[in-house]
Image (tube, rainbow, N blue to C red; front, side, top):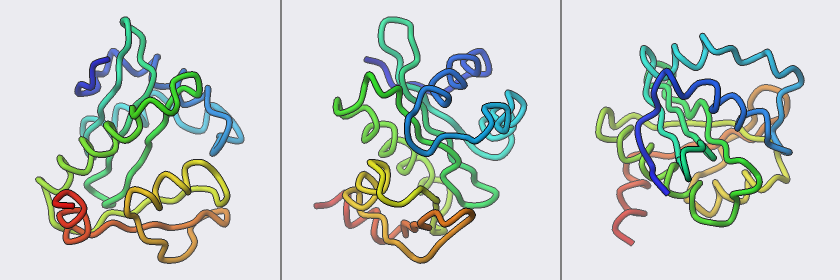
Length: 148
């Protein structure tokens, strides 16, 4: 298993992972375009992938412009192996190395993702979009979590 920086050449596999999930699915798989991925990975922030035997099985992308976790997805076949946590932690370490501003994300309620973020120390601060839970992570909370 390799966690590495996402490359433009990874976008096809990133999209395949994004469309493989069974929760937090897109109503239309074409809502997130390859150009969107490229923009968020290169101009707005940064991305990471998890690769196993030359196959991308998970990815994470953070947006520095909106201080937002744009994506963190894992192929369901590779859940419960610690991959999501590694991608998450790499992403937040990098993010808070760039800025001390709080970062937020939205996810559907009553999903594995909601449980994952709560366990990772994210704080629910309201709602976002289509009744998603809006979570926030502060630099102070991340630093404390890293020390514990």
